[in-house]
Image (cartoon, rainbow, N blue to C red; front, side, top):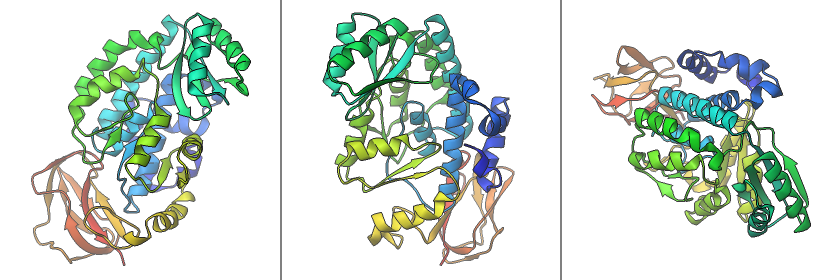
Length: 375
């Protein structure tokens, strides 16, 4: 999933992640085979980094989300996308989470299977009829539920699910029974890692997998992320909550297109798009203008097609150039200020509309600094 991005500017996040993780993330994104990626330690790291690489490319277009949500690991991506976690902290937290889950999976080996074509309550009945170690792990979409537990328990539940009318039960290529009590052993280690990461409050609401409700406060995520390990992912309910919040369109960032498919199955008359390669970026701009046609100009809240966002090249205290004011002409490469010792150079040409960050404000990597109107 990394090959289309090698020559894109946003590939630099892969190099940064490799330095933080002490692992060659680029090799995993370019050359790892299915068996290597089945290891949750590799699957989580590559999915997290590649999704944020796509996000970085989208932010370079000047687009921002109004709400965020992520499926399982994707919740950590959503927290980083919203600024609740810094990129460095996000990488370290995902490494700790994946390693803890890997160890828990080795202590108590488990499997996962998708049950297709059966109502949620009937899948729950199938798990109870199995009378073994098996639970619902993901409520993905109507007619698409994942069960997990011991190999014997999942097999028994599959038999009962088919008897109850399931169209198909298919095993998933994962290395553990995630989002079940089998992950309890990973909880203490994850709690400590979350505490060290110190999630911040976010302006953009994030829908939690655990309760399918929007959260802003950073101090809520320690318990939510810890509970997520052993609780089912309520993705269907999260999508319905986004619908209730009047979300006009859903953009899936990163490899694959499974979540977009779940949107179509769950939200009536939904509009969704996936961005997985650089070729998808132009399609996204056109799609945004269609979903929100009245938003062709900036109204002080969101950034759209004719605007570009400049983000922090490093973490540190921001100091803007004192001679820049609203309306200043900015050329490609113009220095807008400094974050710590790093120069903030604009990758775009345009008219400075305003600084988002304030003088003396401490910024995380990729936090917004200023926005420009390009034409």
